[in-house]
Image: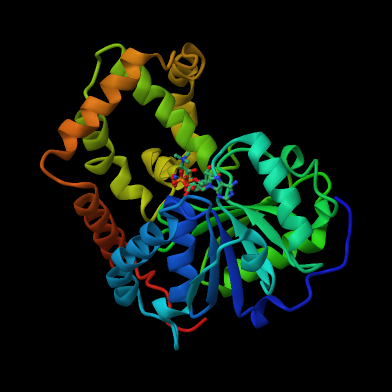
Amino acid sequence: MTTTPPAPCAPEDVRRVACIGAGVIGGGWVAHFLARGYDVTAWDPAPDAEEKLRRLVAAAWPALEQLGLAEGASQDRLTVTATLAEAVADAQFVQESAPEKLELKRSLLAELDAATPPGVVIASSTSGYPMTDMQTEAADPGRLVVGHPFNPPYLIPLVEVVGGERTAADAVAWSSRFYDVAGKSVITMDRELPGFIANRLQEALWREALHMVANGEATVKDIDDSITEGPGLRWAFMGPCLTFALAGGEGGMGHMLDHFGPSLKSPWTRLEAPELDRELRDAMVDGCEEAAGERTYADLVAERDQGVIDVLRATGRLGGTAR
Ligand SMILES: NC(=O)C1=CN([C@@H]2O[C@H](COP(=O)(O)OP(=O)(O)OC[C@H]3O[C@@H](n4cnc5c(N)ncnc54)[C@H](O)[C@@H]3O)[C@@H](O)[C@H]2O)C=CC1
Ligand SMILES: C[N+](C)(C)CC(=O)CC(=O)[O-]
């Protein structure tokens, strides 16, 4: 990693954040930063972006009120701008959440770099591209980092932070501290991994889910129930490693690996990625529609938000109200 000058203000002093791209994730970031009391500017090229964004924020607000708003937090502190340049002109931090297309990310990050005040950190929400591959066209790649959130960013605490080969170490450290101050739970990675950490794990699970649906071995509902009624209950407060250490009884992980390790070799090496053809795509879509039943998208969002809040509350992780 290179070293370029640190950002122009301390992470604790940030007041204005710009969110570029205001779909599911960009909108979720907007809601999070507003709830934490920041002034937020947002830009998205879609003609109906502002209406959709304000609707997303309004739908998220009851959940955010339950979590506790920062002093002065208000939906009125959101400004949707007509241009990208206006959105970032006075920003002290920029969060990019545009579509997951490598060429688009490359040119957008270069454009943001040109328009954003010098030294201000620009983070990408990418769910998988290494920053090394995205920072190729920027004049100052040193300030570009990945800040990978989880949906919805206003409720799921985790952000994975990692730089690319040309990112300054200072920019990684600055953004990790900023997300921490902004109420997120941060994992800072010292190297780029495909899928970072959590998506690498989710991708393994997801690959097996798609195989089972493709082969007619389980329904979408069976797969979802197997997690929500099973391991998902443990994972909300104890990760897969420690829960499996308990599977070894008093012998812990040592006994668990000696006992079950040999029989795991086959499932670890058996499967490759399933072919995501039209039939599998449609089976997944139909299965999800069946599982959702009468519930609309808005119903499911409200149900998910309340569920996450209940879990955070039950596990003593409801955040404070101050930044
Ligand atoms: N959906 C998810 O669960 C998660 C997505 N992400 C990442 O967040 C990013 C955004 O994904 P979503 O919000 O799901 O997509 P989305 O499709 O919901 O939103 C993308 C938004 O970007 C806008 N857009 C299109 N071209 C643009 C441009 N040139 N500049 C700025 N905005 C532009 C679109 O109008 C749209 O509103 C992606 O990089 C994705 O990998 C990260 C974590 C979770
Ligand atoms: C679907 N997704 C791979 C874009 C999801 C993520 O990146 C994180 C999440 O919210 O699970």
